[in-house]
Length: 295
Image (cartoon, rainbow, N blue to C red; front, side):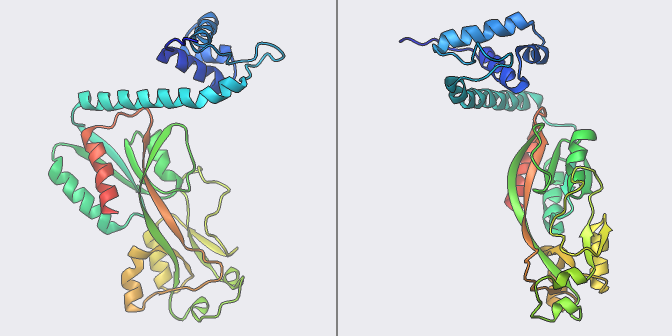
């Protein structure tokens, strides 16, 4: 059997019908008539010599076994072409005149300083707009405030509007002052719930109703990691902190790492995040590589 060569447009129609759940939805998404969508599917089926959707028993398009098997491949082809086009546009776009960058508050200060110092030397004509945020507010700046790039953590969840590339990780460890009850050793399971925990609060609503490494019902919510650090050193509670940020305190004895049965610390994964419809220019691409190398 001789197969034809399906077009990229036919593959995009196929994907749109599946994702929208109807031929009409795909037509609205692609700005075409329903008849054009139906024709595109028929042509694709003819090229591949398979039936992609069941024609009977349901008003909603239902994938056949063959359709299920080909959907992943169709998406992979479309994604690769999207990547090719995005790369080509960035090559034609030239150097950005300005760039909005959002950094997760958990990012080590030394890493931030090193990368941004090198950025200013490498791209002196690019106006950099810098924001430092925590948790869901990082992504909010990308989606709602026009930033082009973020270095953010893992707790935001997947968003179909965003692309993500891992660049490194930060160790979070539970700490308190040396005379804190939880620092005395041989801590029983559940003992941490009896003591005030200092918790970084999300300025956005993207993580509303979710908790991350919160063990105690007694909490103070702080929107600033520096304020949390100050209160921890003042002996007002215990909490998780980036190891790099408290390294000096651990060395001096101002803070100690807690050995809790629940092991509330974590490897906080950091990723470069950007909108899928954003063209990555040379300066933006340089930043992604620089943060990955520095971490």
